Length: 243
Length: 254
Image 1 (tube, rainbow over the protein chains, first blue to last red):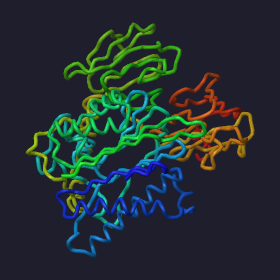
Image 2 (tube, rainbow over the protein chains, first blue to last red):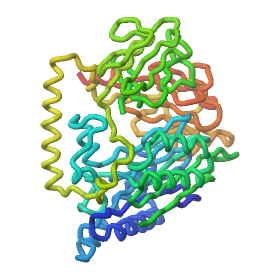
Image 3 (cartoon, chains in turn cyan, purple):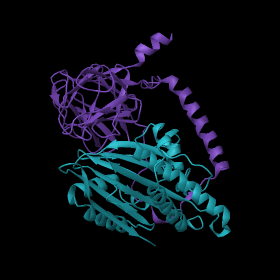
Image 4 (cartoon, rainbow over the protein chains, first blue to last red):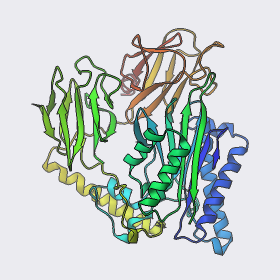
């Protein structure tokens, strides 16, 4: 989902192995859009350590979790559905980022790629605990295991961060279909080489497919540019490849 | 990925991932910027060579030291403490991230989710592993770990029009500007909507200029900057001093 005028960008990746993963990611997008269209809750905002727009994004992601969980309880064919989510809302030059699962957000700033999210995966949990070394891999059945997703529990912990963005910066949101196939260095090179968001997206999707991409790949590249009165986000390219 | 942790007098300022070429120095074009007269413009660099992480002194005036010894070129080991001027940089080999390199296709199974029960079991395993790791480091001095609770910074108004004398930097991001989401409101039609964002990062605050003209210690603030006690910010005419709050409050609470 990209709402360029509002500066809102969301990527969801339904869980392929779980039933109705595609339905879940669709529901998440709709629920988030609905929440963001609604009126702000001024009281909730004032107690948050984040800026109002980031807090609204966080609330919307929480609400979407409740919604998907509720739907899954009602309909047996949707039982156990889940999805990842990574959303960014860029407002007054501050990007608020919320995420659950292994879809990622990166900031390109000063010719450097900075990760804004940390995967909620079994792999990442093992790394944090010092149980695996660089380059080592978990047994195949654990390789793709997530420890947090939307829609599988009545409530979910959402990771949130905020980062200032300046003219020349890029914000990249992507699903694991990209990050499993394309090294971060190549992502950095693509931004440096092509500069135009759509070209960057096209190149990344092509590179992932060349490397044997078998999963859904979703990439959103947002270029931040300077304006006279305010910053504008003028370039958005995204590409969705479905199986 | 390995990482470098920049510290000053035991306080962690920032973590840096080791990319293809990380330079350390005083000038703003370095990846690790240390704004201190004891540090050369381009002081040292860190780069990957095969499986090794190499630290190289770039003929700096005051030299680069690893664990107290001067070096010109050194293969970093886990826990090495690099001294550049008065700042130390600790090398952490274990801050690994999953290899983003393409895995073979047969292992590309569908993503699965661990349910609450599996998750709890996992958490227990991970916590005991962490405890074991903590015990085993006694054998060898570990890099200093800062466990102090998060300090809160404040901006004190030195000169200019403002609605408060002092602002606590409690939120994740504090804005200075004309916008109504700003913590520090600038008055006047021609003031920038958002002039500066001050974001918490671990135990430090990073100021980023976003609009208008901002000076720090009478020099133009033209990129991200870690705030130090006593830094003077001049944001479109409003003069603010950055200080740490905890010292004052800890004493009065004791």
